[in-house]
Amino acid sequence: MTVWATLKNVVDHWASRELRRPYVGYVASTGNGITAGQTFVPEASYFGVRMVEMGLREGGKFFNSFLPLGVVLTEFSFGDGRQRRPTILSNDEIAAQLKAAGAAPGYVDFRNIYAVRRAPMKQDNLSLFVGLFRLPFHDVAQQVLQLAADLTTQTGLAPGVSDGLRVAEKIYDRVAGLFGLNIVTPLFSYADGNALGRSGYLLVAGSYLEEAVAKRLVVTDDRLLLDGQRVSGLDYCLLAVEFTASLLPDGPDSINPLTQLGFHRHWQGVAGSIMRRELERADEHMLTLRAEVITSPELAENDRLVAIGAYQTSYDKLVERVTPKNAHRGWEKAILGAPNDKTIAKPAVTELLKGMQIRLLTGIRDAPEDPDKLFASEAFALRKTVGKTSLVDTDSAVALARVIDRAAAAR
Image (spheres, one colour):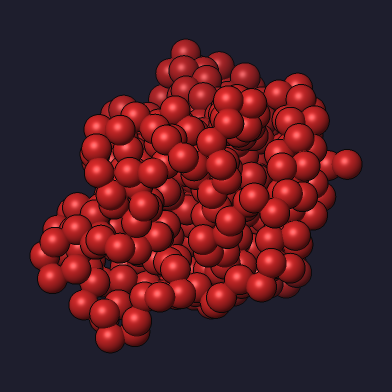
């Protein structure tokens, strides 16, 4: 039985326990919080789900009489398949913070604990489950839950099944067995098969939270406050649903986080080959670079399209610098020579090609010397071009790459 199937059985068992409907809603924020109210757009944005804070109204009893079990389950499309990620919160971390509190209620602050980190938004959205439960303290149960928590940190966003995940399947079988017992008490649980509406702080709490009180809640510096004070007498889990518009540079002087993605290393190979006037080798690097951009599961289609265009214009500008004047035939002549080519019929591709032509006609000699800064400048400019068009089709990047490849062959 797979990890997800095992946990689904657990969730079905929880649902059969006749839980009262929890409170679920977004909470306003002040201070250094995330950007709230952003709308997620398929293939043109990224999402993250971060654990922010957990509150236990009987915090002083946990790890003396009870064990807490907090679970966040996510399922979403990533690359060619579905990612199914269970996140079980670490008992060690929870215990350390609750013991430091010394009394009820107990609070658990999380630092950079992600259920999902910067995944491309897809048409089928995100399925999300959040649950908080307690069971009587027992050394064996504590060891099983802690081991399960340790193993969930290995799942990540990488496609395939890791060795740790295979081991986790057996661990989850034991965790599932615990929930066959009536001693497990559900505090709240919530499931949403279409969880990405807008960004912000999402609160899932016990059913006894009244709507009038909830309206007075606010998140300040990643802490849930009621009238300026930390909330008491409430079981809750606070999540940050984070929005990222693009992984491409947001300005000509910015390059991260794109440089953290594996395919960008090929750009350095391209630039180095051009500086050595090894143009055939540079072309080989560009083919590899475009292929990896097209197949990278880490990019939304909007970024994929812009990245291919920005790499190409940067490439042509570098080549222009090291070749005699007018000796380098860019790709634009081949495109203008085939105006009826259906591979460029998509609106976003057509607009990006126009932007690339403009970029190649201006500023070649004034472009930054550093290859990364040059790419950042081109990507920033082309992003604004694509931003004016309708939604990008899922094969727009492939259409653009075909045009560029055909132009290269015609040189």
